[in-house]
Image (cartoon, rainbow, N blue to C red; front, top):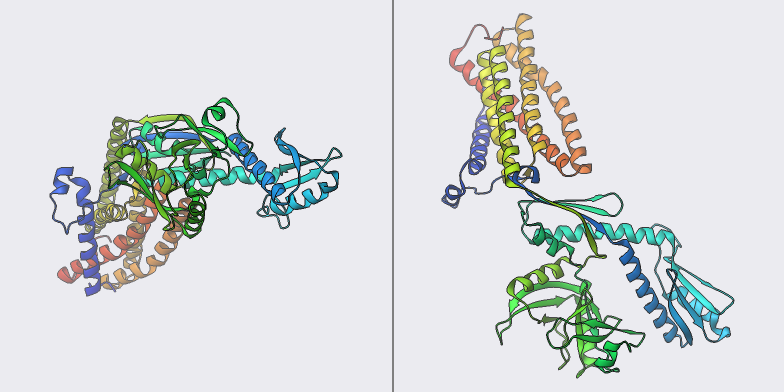
Length: 533
């Protein structure tokens, strides 16, 4: 076992080459990295917010606005259901957070209740047989429709979860590496974006709701009268940003929504060369868009984004290809930002900025310097101890320790992991654990030698019998790291990832590399007594 084997030599050589190649770019200035040959790795460690600076934003999901929007949708669903059933009604609207409607004919109240129970609202998730809305009728021919408390709570929680995922997609589109996005409390979201020093740019991308819908323009009322307040109940007057009109009267019910988009890109119009946003629908959206345009040729439809009309073209013919363009007063940057928002999806509710700050590069540089100093001091102290305690074998352990550091940085660079200040603490802990493995091996070798074993036998038994304890100890460390990585967030995950990589590299370097070095030394010198006895 102690004799050097070909596979050990090859494994150690490849690991050293890997560690050097992938660690080297971190030590070179940017100009030197760009000058490296194409076959050489160029990626470096991603530094966390605490090391390179960046933006810190704390958002609150506007649950009140979400409930208002859901209530408006509930009113429109109630209106459509009663009209489809040809039930006359009056006074449809919002009363104390509920939907209230009065049925004209007392004989049709039960029919209306049954129709609404079948059509309005959906099943309540996690509650078999439960419904999102409750419907009740009173003696005044009035029906009340309201969301249950369970449904309201579920909607709020789902809105936060959806917002986190959409924020993550939007930031990923900006190219920001390893953002930290997590829930804080019941309705708050913490965003940390390393390397993004402009929080305003981040806010412009994150905070826009980006609710897109395609709706018909209501031409039953002249624009001037609609602007003055004469608005039909199933329509609304929305401001315009298309540069042609101050606003449009728009049908409330959407023909197609942004949720049906599969792609959006900033391109240039082939006719005028102006920036536009091209989009493509999924199968359902393409069918609905094709049906809507084929049935309304010659009429205008509006493209509505966050309650504002950005374009209101006339339908010249059926659009059945499932794709189109959004035109407007775009710049290339604004068109690209809109495409990013549409690709990432719409936020389910508006976000309010509760807190924002910028971590400067100076603070990050100080943290990097402090981390480098602490790492150097820790590694130096460990090397001095191991050499003082075990002499030549301590030198072998120190060499393995250096290779261990190279492997850790190489793997983190290769996987584009993010190094945080707690991650540096995990790295220092890893080095100490790696030396623990060598201490176990060397003390076992010493015990075997004192028991009268010859040098080769002491070495063989020392490694084989200490290996069980080393594997047990590192398995428990790896399990702890996995648990922290799975359930932790931010700095905790950075610490856990560094620790997990370190556990794997430490076992390899402390056992395989030192064993190879000792085997090569033994074959060259053939000592009668080991230097650590």
